[in-house]
Image (cartoon, rainbow over all chains, first blue to last red):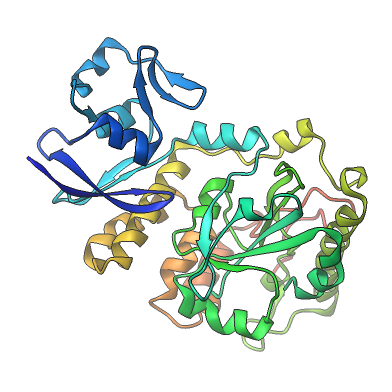
Length: 140
Length: 229
């Protein structure tokens, strides 16, 4: 049954129509939503994001339908974290350790958007053109 | 922490982007208002920056050049773990140790200044091969820990504290080296976690291991952690 599901990515939570199958731990989403929310496109070469394509072995075929992709199954096949609430109303689709390390080794600073105290969003990329000291701290 | 440095260098095409690994704007607000920074002070309750850059503690910092390239990956931003030698009742640090803490911080700040002034000619800037070698490698456990932490924070923020708890606990279990995760989760149970018996037991359990990883920088302390006096 298609319902409204929350997908949590590093860009925050987003609502999308999807079919959550708790028994098989699957989450079927329209390919256009997968591309829009998660940045991955199904092509002849496999599942692609930018220049990177992950070939899908025949075992992945059960995660692919003409009208929908089981992102939970595909994510697990790519060693990417998948988490969900028991009622399957909210899911996290994460990034793998190797993707994170490869991104850092490219030396291109990963971008992010976070709010200041007033709630105004700032992106790291807003400061392109200047040297940036990205510094963390905490009140604890 | 960075306002003095920033005030001196802000005309030189340089900015500090400060990110609080905190449970929300309310926890960070008094500190930010007291520091009155004129650089962006952002709140990162889900520790997205720690996840993207693979950081385990604060203060950590990354140097990013004008084209968005990392010239020093995530590292301890000049902190020396002198607090491990302090008297836990009076909170007084022995003078020789306090001097080391001050020197480490001054060395780091001077290095940032050198970079801002000389750019890629600064001796503190890593060439690409060296920068790559300093990238902290992420394990599957660390990637999963951050995913659990971020999902738990989302559930907390959407009013589902009971559902959040197992994910937050899993994050702690999967990434025991992250003081960021451990301390932010402890924070809501106890005021002043930094001096709780639980915190000190965890610090003591480090033994000869560091609380703040040594910085690969000329002039920084290279010895092991100071022992408790």
